[in-house]
Image (cartoon, rainbow, N blue to C red; front, side, top):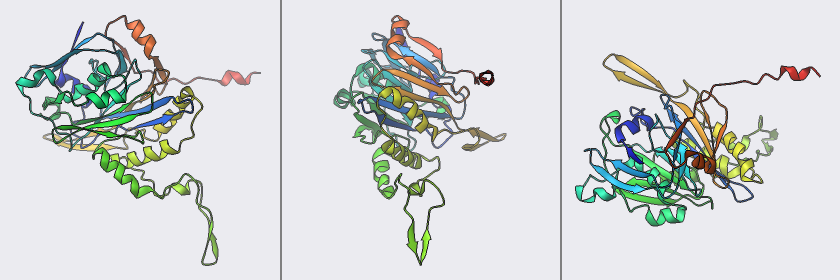
Length: 369
Protein backbone atom coordinates (compact mmCIF):
# COMPACT_ATOMS: atom_id res chain seq x y z
CA UNK A 1 0.00 0.00 0.00
CA UNK A 2 1.28 3.44 -0.89
CA UNK A 3 0.82 6.59 1.19
CA UNK A 4 1.07 9.81 -0.84
CA UNK A 5 1.59 12.95 1.22
CA UNK A 6 -0.20 15.98 -0.26
CA UNK A 7 1.50 19.01 1.18
CA UNK A 8 -1.19 21.64 0.74
CA UNK A 9 -3.95 19.58 2.32
CA UNK A 10 -1.61 18.31 4.98
CA UNK A 11 -0.68 21.69 6.25
CA UNK A 12 -4.31 22.70 6.45
CA UNK A 13 -4.26 20.15 9.24
CA UNK A 14 -0.87 20.94 10.72
CA UNK A 15 -1.08 24.70 10.74
CA UNK A 16 -4.33 26.29 9.62
CA UNK A 17 -3.33 29.33 11.67
CA UNK A 18 -0.91 30.61 9.06
CA UNK A 19 -1.96 34.17 9.81
CA UNK A 20 -0.32 34.06 13.21
CA UNK A 21 3.22 35.04 13.99
CA UNK A 22 3.72 32.02 16.22
CA UNK A 23 2.27 28.74 17.33
CA UNK A 24 2.48 27.92 21.00
CA UNK A 25 3.57 24.27 21.09
CA UNK A 26 5.62 23.28 24.15
CA UNK A 27 7.54 20.06 24.80
CA UNK A 28 9.52 18.65 27.74
CA UNK A 29 10.99 15.41 29.07
CA UNK A 30 11.27 13.55 32.38
CA UNK A 31 13.48 10.55 33.14
CA UNK A 32 12.29 8.16 35.86
CA UNK A 33 14.54 6.37 38.34
CA UNK A 34 14.21 3.18 36.29
CA UNK A 35 15.70 5.05 33.33
CA UNK A 36 12.42 5.32 31.48
CA UNK A 37 12.01 8.43 29.34
CA UNK A 38 8.63 10.18 29.19
CA UNK A 39 8.00 13.05 26.76
CA UNK A 40 5.15 15.57 26.95
CA UNK A 41 3.92 17.99 24.31
CA UNK A 42 1.06 20.40 23.64
CA UNK A 43 -0.32 21.41 20.26
CA UNK A 44 -2.01 24.78 19.85
CA UNK A 45 -4.23 25.90 16.99
CA UNK A 46 -6.80 28.55 16.20
CA UNK A 47 -9.27 25.89 15.14
CA UNK A 48 -10.00 22.26 15.81
CA UNK A 49 -7.48 20.20 13.81
CA UNK A 50 -9.75 17.13 14.09
CA UNK A 51 -6.68 15.07 14.81
CA UNK A 52 -6.58 11.31 14.59
CA UNK A 53 -4.23 8.83 16.13
CA UNK A 54 -2.48 7.52 13.04
CA UNK A 55 -0.76 4.16 12.67
CA UNK A 56 1.69 3.68 9.80
CA UNK A 57 3.08 0.13 9.68
CA UNK A 58 6.58 -0.98 8.82
CA UNK A 59 6.94 -1.60 5.10
CA UNK A 60 4.62 1.22 4.05
CA UNK A 61 5.69 3.01 0.85
CA UNK A 62 5.76 6.78 1.37
CA UNK A 63 6.31 9.52 -1.21
CA UNK A 64 6.79 13.23 -0.57
CA UNK A 65 4.91 15.42 -3.06
CA UNK A 66 6.60 18.67 -4.05
CA UNK A 67 5.14 22.02 -5.06
CA UNK A 68 5.21 21.47 -8.84
CA UNK A 69 3.40 18.12 -8.49
CA UNK A 70 6.71 16.34 -8.83
CA UNK A 71 7.52 13.36 -6.66
CA UNK A 72 10.25 13.79 -4.11
CA UNK A 73 11.87 11.06 -2.07
CA UNK A 74 10.15 7.67 -1.99
CA UNK A 75 10.97 5.14 0.70
CA UNK A 76 9.52 2.22 2.63
CA UNK A 77 9.12 2.65 6.37
CA UNK A 78 11.54 0.48 8.32
CA UNK A 79 9.61 0.90 11.57
CA UNK A 80 5.96 1.19 12.50
CA UNK A 81 4.77 4.56 13.82
CA UNK A 82 1.99 5.72 16.14
CA UNK A 83 1.14 9.37 16.73
CA UNK A 84 -1.12 12.34 16.08
CA UNK A 85 -1.96 13.81 12.69
CA UNK A 86 -4.52 16.37 11.60
CA UNK A 87 -7.60 16.22 9.38
CA UNK A 88 -7.04 12.55 8.59
CA UNK A 89 -3.81 12.84 6.62
CA UNK A 90 -1.12 10.20 6.77
CA UNK A 91 1.70 12.10 8.43
CA UNK A 92 2.65 12.76 12.04
CA UNK A 93 2.97 16.12 13.75
CA UNK A 94 3.93 14.14 16.85
CA UNK A 95 4.80 10.48 17.02
CA UNK A 96 6.83 7.55 18.28
CA UNK A 97 8.07 4.48 16.44
CA UNK A 98 8.27 0.88 17.59
CA UNK A 99 11.90 1.34 18.70
CA UNK A 100 11.09 4.17 21.09
CA UNK A 101 12.23 7.09 18.91
CA UNK A 102 10.05 10.19 19.32
CA UNK A 103 9.80 13.16 16.94
CA UNK A 104 7.82 16.37 17.41
CA UNK A 105 7.28 19.03 14.74
CA UNK A 106 7.01 22.58 16.11
CA UNK A 107 6.29 25.86 14.32
CA UNK A 108 9.43 27.94 13.57
CA UNK A 109 8.41 31.25 11.94
CA UNK A 110 10.94 33.81 10.83
CA UNK A 111 13.93 31.44 10.90
CA UNK A 112 13.28 28.33 8.80
CA UNK A 113 15.16 28.39 5.49
CA UNK A 114 14.96 25.74 2.77
CA UNK A 115 16.65 24.83 -0.51
CA UNK A 116 15.09 25.65 -3.86
CA UNK A 117 13.75 22.54 -5.63
CA UNK A 118 16.23 20.98 -8.05
CA UNK A 119 14.96 18.31 -10.42
CA UNK A 120 18.35 16.59 -10.39
CA UNK A 121 17.95 16.00 -6.64
CA UNK A 122 14.27 15.09 -6.39
CA UNK A 123 15.15 11.58 -5.24
CA UNK A 124 16.50 13.01 -1.95
CA UNK A 125 14.17 16.02 -1.67
CA UNK A 126 11.12 16.37 0.54
CA UNK A 127 8.67 18.98 1.71
CA UNK A 128 9.50 20.27 5.22
CA UNK A 129 6.33 18.84 6.73
CA UNK A 130 7.37 15.32 5.68
CA UNK A 131 10.66 15.29 7.56
CA UNK A 132 9.41 14.07 10.94
CA UNK A 133 7.73 11.04 9.42
CA UNK A 134 10.91 10.22 7.50
CA UNK A 135 12.92 10.26 10.74
CA UNK A 136 10.41 8.04 12.54
CA UNK A 137 10.15 5.61 9.64
CA UNK A 138 13.88 5.09 9.24
CA UNK A 139 15.77 5.43 12.53
CA UNK A 140 15.77 3.73 15.94
CA UNK A 141 17.91 6.08 18.03
CA UNK A 142 19.22 9.62 18.32
CA UNK A 143 22.66 8.27 17.43
CA UNK A 144 21.28 7.04 14.09
CA UNK A 145 19.51 10.35 13.53
CA UNK A 146 22.78 12.24 14.08
CA UNK A 147 24.46 10.08 11.45
CA UNK A 148 21.73 10.54 8.85
CA UNK A 149 19.69 13.69 9.54
CA UNK A 150 21.20 15.67 6.63
CA UNK A 151 20.99 12.96 3.97
CA UNK A 152 17.81 14.53 2.59
CA UNK A 153 17.08 18.04 1.33
CA UNK A 154 14.20 20.06 2.71
CA UNK A 155 12.99 22.17 -0.20
CA UNK A 156 10.73 25.17 -0.55
CA UNK A 157 7.15 24.00 -0.88
CA UNK A 158 4.83 27.04 -0.99
CA UNK A 159 1.40 26.24 0.36
CA UNK A 160 -1.74 28.08 -0.59
CA UNK A 161 -3.12 27.82 2.94
CA UNK A 162 0.01 29.65 4.17
CA UNK A 163 -0.31 32.49 1.69
CA UNK A 164 2.11 30.71 -0.65
CA UNK A 165 4.99 30.31 1.77
CA UNK A 166 6.59 27.09 2.98
CA UNK A 167 5.87 25.61 6.38
CA UNK A 168 8.39 27.03 8.88
CA UNK A 169 9.19 24.04 11.09
CA UNK A 170 11.86 22.64 13.36
CA UNK A 171 12.03 19.28 15.09
CA UNK A 172 12.85 17.68 18.43
CA UNK A 173 13.98 14.05 18.65
CA UNK A 174 14.14 11.89 21.80
CA UNK A 175 15.03 8.24 22.23
CA UNK A 176 14.58 5.75 25.06
CA UNK A 177 18.18 6.20 26.28
CA UNK A 178 17.44 9.81 27.24
CA UNK A 179 19.37 11.29 24.32
CA UNK A 180 17.76 14.32 22.71
CA UNK A 181 18.54 16.57 19.75
CA UNK A 182 16.96 19.50 17.96
CA UNK A 183 17.10 19.86 14.17
CA UNK A 184 16.57 23.28 12.58
CA UNK A 185 16.64 24.34 8.90
CA UNK A 186 18.87 27.44 8.95
CA UNK A 187 20.41 29.15 5.91
CA UNK A 188 19.29 26.26 3.70
CA UNK A 189 21.18 23.78 5.87
CA UNK A 190 19.94 21.36 8.50
CA UNK A 191 21.63 22.17 11.82
CA UNK A 192 21.57 19.75 14.74
CA UNK A 193 22.02 20.56 18.43
CA UNK A 194 22.31 18.31 21.45
CA UNK A 195 19.47 19.17 23.84
CA UNK A 196 20.52 18.41 27.43
CA UNK A 197 17.36 19.87 28.98
CA UNK A 198 14.91 18.05 26.69
CA UNK A 199 12.74 21.17 26.30
CA UNK A 200 11.39 22.68 23.08
CA UNK A 201 9.11 25.53 22.01
CA UNK A 202 9.21 27.75 18.92
CA UNK A 203 11.24 30.73 17.64
CA UNK A 204 13.98 31.97 17.99
CA UNK A 205 16.64 29.33 17.36
CA UNK A 206 17.36 26.63 19.93
CA UNK A 207 20.82 27.97 20.79
CA UNK A 208 19.25 31.36 21.60
CA UNK A 209 16.83 29.72 24.04
CA UNK A 210 19.68 27.90 25.76
CA UNK A 211 21.66 31.13 26.14
CA UNK A 212 18.56 32.87 27.50
CA UNK A 213 18.45 30.40 30.40
CA UNK A 214 21.44 32.28 31.83
CA UNK A 215 19.09 35.15 32.63
CA UNK A 216 17.21 32.96 35.12
CA UNK A 217 20.05 31.31 37.06
CA UNK A 218 18.77 32.94 40.27
CA UNK A 219 15.51 30.98 40.23
CA UNK A 220 14.95 28.19 42.74
CA UNK A 221 12.08 25.98 43.83
CA UNK A 222 13.21 26.54 47.42
CA UNK A 223 11.38 29.37 49.18
CA UNK A 224 13.38 32.46 50.14
CA UNK A 225 14.32 32.53 53.82
CA UNK A 226 13.16 35.48 55.97
CA UNK A 227 15.88 38.06 56.53
CA UNK A 228 16.52 41.22 58.53
CA UNK A 229 16.12 44.54 56.77
CA UNK A 230 16.46 47.89 58.57
CA UNK A 231 15.67 46.22 61.86
CA UNK A 232 12.57 44.40 60.64
CA UNK A 233 12.07 40.81 59.57
CA UNK A 234 11.01 40.50 55.93
CA UNK A 235 9.10 37.38 54.96
CA UNK A 236 7.66 36.17 51.67
CA UNK A 237 3.87 36.59 51.62
CA UNK A 238 3.37 32.97 50.60
CA UNK A 239 4.77 29.88 48.90
CA UNK A 240 6.77 30.02 45.68
CA UNK A 241 9.05 32.96 46.47
CA UNK A 242 12.07 31.16 45.03
CA UNK A 243 10.53 31.34 41.57
CA UNK A 244 9.68 35.02 41.68
CA UNK A 245 10.68 36.38 38.28
CA UNK A 246 9.76 33.20 36.39
CA UNK A 247 8.20 34.47 33.14
CA UNK A 248 4.52 33.64 32.93
CA UNK A 249 3.44 34.81 29.48
CA UNK A 250 2.78 32.61 26.48
CA UNK A 251 5.69 33.59 24.26
CA UNK A 252 8.13 30.86 23.16
CA UNK A 253 11.08 32.21 25.22
CA UNK A 254 8.97 32.36 28.38
CA UNK A 255 7.49 28.91 27.84
CA UNK A 256 10.96 27.48 27.23
CA UNK A 257 12.21 28.85 30.55
CA UNK A 258 9.17 27.55 32.46
CA UNK A 259 9.40 24.13 30.84
CA UNK A 260 13.10 23.91 31.66
CA UNK A 261 12.58 24.91 35.31
CA UNK A 262 9.59 22.62 35.86
CA UNK A 263 11.14 19.58 34.19
CA UNK A 264 14.60 19.96 35.75
CA UNK A 265 13.21 20.39 39.28
CA UNK A 266 10.51 17.71 39.08
CA UNK A 267 10.77 14.87 41.61
CA UNK A 268 11.94 11.72 39.85
CA UNK A 269 9.32 8.98 39.90
CA UNK A 270 10.29 5.36 40.49
CA UNK A 271 9.09 4.16 37.10
CA UNK A 272 8.25 5.55 33.69
CA UNK A 273 4.62 4.50 34.19
CA UNK A 274 4.41 6.69 37.30
CA UNK A 275 6.05 9.56 35.43
CA UNK A 276 3.24 9.64 32.84
CA UNK A 277 0.68 11.38 35.12
CA UNK A 278 3.45 13.61 36.45
CA UNK A 279 4.21 14.83 32.93
CA UNK A 280 0.52 15.52 32.35
CA UNK A 281 0.61 17.72 35.46
CA UNK A 282 3.64 19.58 34.12
CA UNK A 283 1.99 20.08 30.74
CA UNK A 284 -1.06 21.60 32.44
CA UNK A 285 1.12 24.66 33.06
CA UNK A 286 1.07 25.32 29.31
CA UNK A 287 -2.61 24.72 28.66
CA UNK A 288 -4.24 27.61 26.77
CA UNK A 289 -7.98 28.08 27.41
CA UNK A 290 -10.08 29.71 24.72
CA UNK A 291 -9.87 33.49 24.80
CA UNK A 292 -6.57 33.94 26.62
CA UNK A 293 -4.45 34.11 23.44
CA UNK A 294 -6.01 35.92 20.48
CA UNK A 295 -4.96 37.16 17.08
CA UNK A 296 -7.02 39.82 15.33
CA UNK A 297 -6.74 39.69 11.54
CA UNK A 298 -7.92 42.52 9.33
CA UNK A 299 -9.89 41.46 6.26
CA UNK A 300 -11.81 43.22 3.51
CA UNK A 301 -14.97 42.64 5.52
CA UNK A 302 -13.61 43.89 8.82
CA UNK A 303 -11.68 41.91 11.40
CA UNK A 304 -11.63 38.27 12.37
CA UNK A 305 -10.55 37.02 15.78
CA UNK A 306 -8.68 33.72 16.08
CA UNK A 307 -8.44 32.15 19.52
CA UNK A 308 -5.48 29.87 20.06
CA UNK A 309 -6.20 26.87 22.28
CA UNK A 310 -4.39 23.74 23.35
CA UNK A 311 -6.02 21.34 20.92
CA UNK A 312 -4.38 18.34 22.51
CA UNK A 313 -1.67 17.22 24.89
CA UNK A 314 0.35 14.03 24.44
CA UNK A 315 2.54 12.13 26.89
CA UNK A 316 4.71 9.37 25.42
CA UNK A 317 6.41 6.66 27.47
CA UNK A 318 9.42 5.60 25.40
CA UNK A 319 10.26 2.65 27.67
CA UNK A 320 6.85 0.98 27.76
CA UNK A 321 5.84 2.30 24.33
CA UNK A 322 2.58 3.95 25.33
CA UNK A 323 1.11 7.02 23.63
CA UNK A 324 -1.27 8.89 25.95
CA UNK A 325 -3.32 11.93 25.02
CA UNK A 326 -6.14 14.23 26.03
CA UNK A 327 -8.00 16.82 23.99
CA UNK A 328 -9.27 20.30 24.76
CA UNK A 329 -12.91 19.26 24.72
CA UNK A 330 -12.75 15.81 26.29
CA UNK A 331 -9.98 16.12 28.91
CA UNK A 332 -10.17 12.34 29.37
CA UNK A 333 -6.75 10.70 29.19
CA UNK A 334 -6.67 7.92 26.60
CA UNK A 335 -3.73 5.63 25.93
CA UNK A 336 -2.53 3.62 22.94
CA UNK A 337 -0.15 0.70 23.37
CA UNK A 338 2.19 1.11 20.40
CA UNK A 339 2.94 -2.58 19.92
CA UNK A 340 -0.73 -3.58 20.21
CA UNK A 341 -1.84 -0.82 17.83
CA UNK A 342 0.66 -1.88 15.18
CA UNK A 343 -0.40 -5.49 15.59
CA UNK A 344 -4.09 -4.59 15.31
CA UNK A 345 -3.46 -2.53 12.16
CA UNK A 346 -2.39 -5.72 10.35
CA UNK A 347 0.04 -3.96 8.05
CA UNK A 348 -2.33 -1.19 7.00
CA UNK A 349 -2.50 2.56 7.65
CA UNK A 350 -5.17 3.11 10.31
CA UNK A 351 -6.85 6.10 11.98
CA UNK A 352 -8.87 6.53 15.15
CA UNK A 353 -10.29 9.84 16.35
CA UNK A 354 -8.56 11.56 19.24
CA UNK A 355 -11.68 13.43 20.30
CA UNK A 356 -13.73 12.25 23.27
CA UNK A 357 -16.77 13.69 25.00
CA UNK A 358 -16.38 15.53 28.28
CA UNK A 359 -17.71 13.19 30.96
CA UNK A 360 -18.08 13.43 34.72
CA UNK A 361 -18.42 10.47 37.07
CA UNK A 362 -21.23 10.90 39.56
CA UNK A 363 -20.03 9.47 42.90
CA UNK A 364 -22.99 10.61 45.00
CA UNK A 365 -24.11 7.03 45.59
CA UNK A 366 -20.94 6.31 47.56
CA UNK A 367 -22.38 8.23 50.53
CA UNK A 368 -25.12 5.62 51.07
CA UNK A 369 -23.05 3.36 53.31
